[in-house]
Image (tube, rainbow, N blue to C red; front, side, top):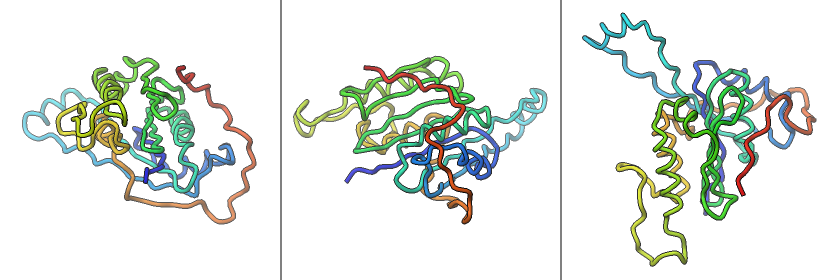
Length: 229
């Protein structure tokens, strides 16, 4: 049975709980989950010796680690909307994942604007679109990372396309899952910047007595990139 989940990650040091509670007041009613499961990434080890000496003179600000949030309940398809809203609210980079019926999509946002995305579920063949160079720069990765996963998914063995038992191409050595597997998105997330999968962590539900929300749609968000045909 395929897994149906929606989650997102933001690169920020801010506490997500108050941000999510604030955004709930303007979220579309049908996009509000029962709550969220939140997992924070691990802080990188502090440099020692010569590296610490160099870091002292560079005076570079540490890059915030990613914090992930999974939507609890049946609103998993709203993960991109929540990612976009949090990205806009905090002025940070966010990556959303939508896993449905054995496929996975992702989208990358910067300060609430969608920069790039890959559609798999709704299209006959996986398509990568948007400003891939800018997305790579924001995340500090090579553009080849996005292209190799797209190529691997397009080349993946699909029932009827190849003989049973054929070996699937892997985007990178060491990936735990084949590209067409729904859990391959976890390999991809890890390569984007050690994004933690929120399978475990802090879980919270909305406070009892929270004011009702009757909004028909999200407010104040720019339009998402058009889905390619």
